[in-house]
Amino acid sequence: MSEVLETLILGSGPAGYTAAIYAARANLNPVLLAGPQPGGQLTITNDVENYPGFPKGIMGPEMMEMFKEQAARFGTEVLEELGTEVDLKQRPFTVKTASDQTFRTKTLIISTGATALYLGLENEQKLQGRGVSACATCDGFFFKGKKVYVVGGGDSACEEATFLTKYASEVKMVVRRDELRASKIMQDRAKNHPKVDILWEQNVTDVFGVDDGKVTGLELTHSRTGEKQKVDADGLFLAIGHKPNTAMFEGMLDMDETGYIKTVPGRTATNIEGVFAAGDCQDSYYRQAVTAAGTGCMAAIEVEKFLEAQGH
Ligand code: NDP
Image 1 (cartoon, helix red, strand yellow):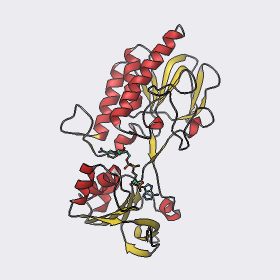
Image 2: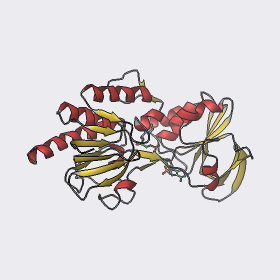
Image 3: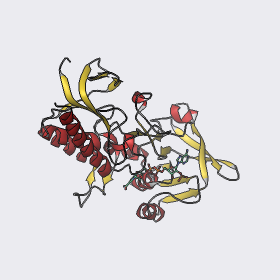
Image 4: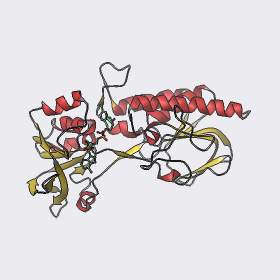
């Protein structure tokens, strides 16, 4: 593409689409590359109950369709493309995609989000999609009447455990400490559910499967005593947090030790002028759809002011 864009947005979660809505309404004709998971993490979420304006809650995928529609309505060009390479040393910046397209842009909004973490066990990878999953909403349906384990003690783990009770006959939460990290309301939902049982101070240290690849059991190890036990299981769901999708920018943008892009406090500006970061790729603390949307809005406004200051 020879045209130089005013702004290019990487990622299609709440941050990316909100940035697109604001940039499009500012007549910046944004192009948004949707990335590997169009709609972002909310497309693999269940009910979204905490996004203001939806008093009865809304399904994550439906909400992201609405975000997309609103961004498109003001003229955002949404492309099902994956950015694979960026050059931020020269202006205009360039972004190459998996389909070998090259975009040139005066400003860049990075809203590439974050991805679920796994435990790092060898068998966990082999059995992924065959009983091992990081998305109860996507895969819960396959565990009707089955016994499943959920690893983690945060809001995600409680949410996934509670959700899985719709299908599974037994849901065991494997929590490495003697307390949960989750908010009180999410804890109560999991703890008070008759199908959910919490295994305290336990870790999943191996996953077993039969030859045709299905999960059959787990090895659990006690956090303090190191005592091991084998248990029967049909499914293993991971809900142990996320890592930011920022590998593409390593060595170019300032990041913290876990890979979250550093921004100027209270803003979305990165260490490179004209490059802005919004949403979960720069937020290890709040990680909410509404905060992601808020920073997406900030990024678009900062782009507008940056271009104005440059005389564009
Ligand atoms: P969190 O980082 O909050 O929690 C991760 C959990 O996994 C912790 O309990 C942690 O244990 C545990 N854990 C991490 N690594 C391992 C490991 N290797 N082995 C065993 N356990 C491990 O992540 P979440 O995804 O739960 O939540 C992220 C954010 O999203 C939070 O801000 C949360 O509030 C929000 N959220 C909100 C929801 C809602 O409101 N509906 C739903 C889901 C998430 P430990 O506590 O010991 O560190």
